[in-house]
Image (tube, rainbow, N blue to C red; front, side, top):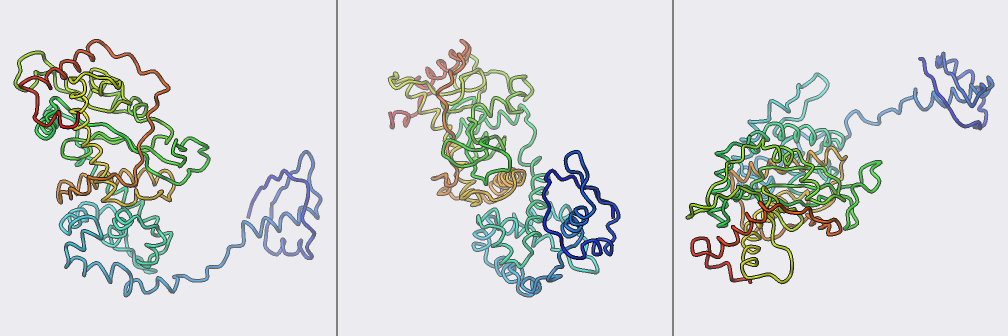
Length: 434
């Protein structure tokens, strides 16, 4: 064995008897010690050699090859005892795995080849169905990995490997389906959805961000420490009128604002460089002029621009501006509802995620693609949209001045406000909450 160790302290533990003999008998042939500018004496070398040998060479013997508690997994583990019974009770299955039997089977068909392992002569691997069940239970129940270890009788270390492996497979398999490329026809379809359900024309999506609570990442200082006095990463999302995510950005520092995150996102870079196939301006429904741009909608944290529509600011506003703000708020509510569906479906968001930072980001991304996957197949319960449990609003930073809006942006918002109070663009309910 060859080993080099550099020590910075000059003090040594007491001399043990027969140290030199033990070191020689265990064949540590080359160990060099340097302290300051000089070398240690032979006696001190022997002591340090023995210490290094104890620390790096001797291995702690395992008490068990397989712990007795998990040795009977194939007979009494959670998957064996529950899965078949749950499949026979669809409502219970949905409550446990947060999706229908049909959706579970489809998901399994998509990712089984990506996660399956080869059995060996030493032990059997965990079957793909059981790995998927463990992962969905973790995401859907909000339990910790120890709970899964105890209920499924799978080693704690193995649980962590399963979560990472399955979530990677889900993300890689579903992201192209749930976040397809942006085309002009897709944008127009999204705009038609907002017009149909919210009566807000030329809208391409509602933007918002939420804090996701996490354990403090190592060596991160205060980067992830937010104004609510806990550690978090930010989930920034754009949502369509079907409560589906069309874009997500996960992992920004908890202390950052959602407008800053959006401005620095790859999506915004492409948006500003006209690389997202946004359709050309078109007249509002029922009109011929003027042609209005397609825009995203956000709250007062965002800057007014030709591509981002935000509310009028101020407390004393005209009726026209108040109606505009209400109509915009009504449309923007879809992103709030999407967060509500997400957090109520996947209860991992109800408490701080106890995992490394990279796994936290992967878990959040996985929940978002599963949200779209399940939404397309199983729908949702309207009650799930009523609250956003587990997420925290991002602080609105009013200390920094808002960039001055262009005349083009101001005119576009004013034209839309005029449209909302016209005979063509008004709706009966728009004055209910003024």
